[in-house]
Image (cartoon, rainbow, N blue to C red; front, top):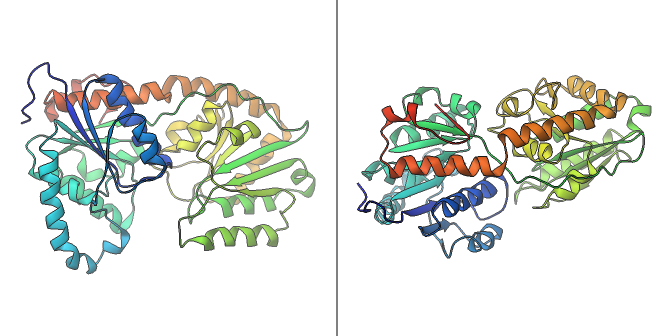
Length: 396
């Protein structure tokens, strides 16, 4: 157990395998802020993989932010190549164990911090592992095995994420929905008779930009004249082909007058101000769906794929529209509803704002994370978790 005396200020080690400001990065920032708010005098050390936007933002919250050569699990490790990395991994596990021993609570954000994940097995006190991943195939097997080995209390970002690790049902866990800051009421910028449709997301194989383009091509020309679409995002280095494919598809479907491509912006407020409706047509299940709650915080209606964590966010017909995943016709029909009744976006946006305030406000998320940390500090056993009061969470 930790050597912490009763009543003493706790110490936290917070580990994150990235340094940008995308979804899980921003969530990590909120988590560290939650610990700082709950325990203002706590010793908090943050480990990142490099200096980037997250490093600079984190320095505004805590003083001790370090760069660590942690062993981050990559797809390239899924195979024989991992054998050649075993000596380095063993060394990293031993170093991680020594580092963790100096803190009351270790908080690992995401499943891919392999050295710290495995080192938790060697620690007498459980750690917190924040599970953002909703994997499939061999990745699901690997992640499930790692979580089974870890001596940890798991924080899932949605029930959908929790259910994807079916054989870990007996692992102590809580569900804490992500949260985001409330936004000032954003006046709509669309012209009379025009519907502005926004999709924010990285250009990759599953965020659904090509599907949305297919849906737009199914609209009548007169309908497209009353629609403006912005696709906002960027690609990982080496994956520029995804953006090129979207550009080529826009040209091939003759959508250049309707669709505009814009680069990623870590502050998306101006895009939400422009939008009437926000689309999240993910081809694969989202672990949660941060864009959806951001849109709701801006009082915007949401069109979302009917799977994964999005089904826990969007109240179909009330705060937006759920559509069959991968179905361009269903997506077209959803867009067509807002074209036929532009006032629907305002009505659903208002309902979305109320739902956001009730379930997805940043303060509720931060309370849930701090309460989970309190459980570890109190030495809560798995049998105690069913009765543990955890703000803004549900106990799995």
